[in-house]
Image (cartoon, rainbow, N blue to C red):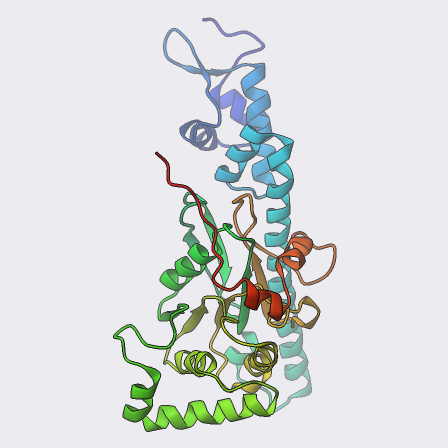
Length: 341
């Protein structure tokens, strides 16, 4: 095959697209584009290949991953909307972090200008929310996830079968020193009950009973599930990931618990909690140092959702939430996926 004005070699194609030759090779390796081969084996790009490569380059410029782009190219506009919504949510989260950093710099400059001797130390004033990146498990197929790990409270939500429990376990595995608190909280991994632990650890019993008394004063009902949760959160850990935090708790206990986690505890160890309860997750009450992660029903990658109406994913989050009495009636309901024959 001889070259013509319609067919470009890799160097010419990359230059016209504004990308590197390495990027074109990567698109090819991921199966996103298949260049035409000359009789000598050289890669060439005709109008069809250039149009597809241009779409890939445009989506990459928006920040979409190659895995997201593959779904968009396969599914067309039906997949483009969710992919753009996920990217918008990620950019908004990064913008919030950038805004926080700008505010810290502004306050630091103000402290330096006024010569304040009582201002926090430089590391404290300049601290920003750290992030980790890890590969998501099935059903996302290795998609990278960028997670903010510095916020004291993060809510994980999604409809049945969306993969939120898998995400929670992946977060617990990716975070050094994190503890996963599963639904079976009445005994620890060694089968030791709360009563035995209290007998063996009187200091633990005293701390938990102090918190429990505060929660009861705020409207909670003292119960084994609430006590077990408090024991689990008393563990020395760098972070906690809690499966369905409202499990077996009544409305008053849920309201008192989230108020305590938000304002009452001295230790601000990050807590990632799965929930579908309106008492636990009230978008109107979300503070600037809290976050919502949504696992979409269509198995698009999880996204950060801003807590205001109109934000990408906000309506889905609202639709996933139910009152405590409804959650109590549906407790234990799980998504079921038939096995592949």
